[in-house]
Figure (cartoon, rainbow, N blue to C red):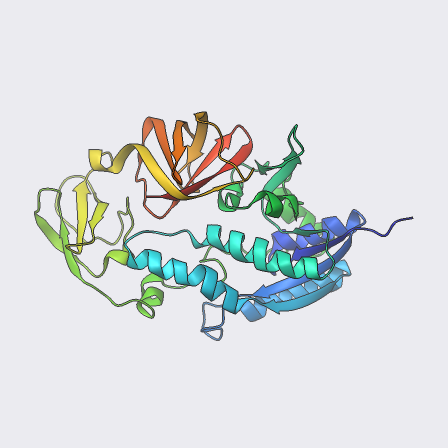
Length: 355
């Protein structure tokens, strides 16, 4: 009789990773838990739940009947994720730290640690799935729960990373996970989902950025050059933003349509469907493909932000580290720094950062 496979689960203290650990244990794996602490700058303030999360992870591990280790990846997070996060905001782009955090911390630093512990694979509570294609390569698939599918955030995983990953919740829907957690008696079964910045938490965003980047106020202008007000810093704004502009007057609402970094100007337009907010195509770099090679040019679907329905598109070309994607219907508020992620049916192919 062979020993069971050792699986190391990233226990966050949340309900999804907790149910994942319970499912794997029940399936007969040798399960170990790891709680990752990746942020240390202000762990005692009101927005950081690290202590509560760690307590929940330990309580869950006790109930499931597994050991849990607390591991600190704060230095790796600062070097690999947070430094990039700040440099992108400083350059006027809107980064997605969750995407980089998955690629660099959860599926790199954590994966390396788990392999050193003798693990065959790691598991997380992501709503995604994997299978093998006809050539034996691992595919990354959408989760069954369309409203919770997190494959968008995982598109930067390499073939090695995705082949070492298990997603026990891939075939489940969130209400089912909550119900199971309550039936098992998990102490965190009713805990609300985290919606803040990956590992940093839910804090007032402007106040948080102010600690690291200087304020640079400047004018808010129309494309024709009419000054409509003042912004406190281009980093606080993103394409398509409507709230917080403070532009009054009659007519349709105002939206952010662009940034002129050289002039420190925020370009604003009136009306949701203003032409400057609609883009028929885009270019992306910092490309990453799950199969470790680019898909062939052709027909696919894509998302340019997480909370978005798939958009039919054509991958026109991939050349010199840049992908060009053309949409059947112009896309609203395509944002530099965010990611465009390509799909072929249920399979997430990968993508890149919008230029």
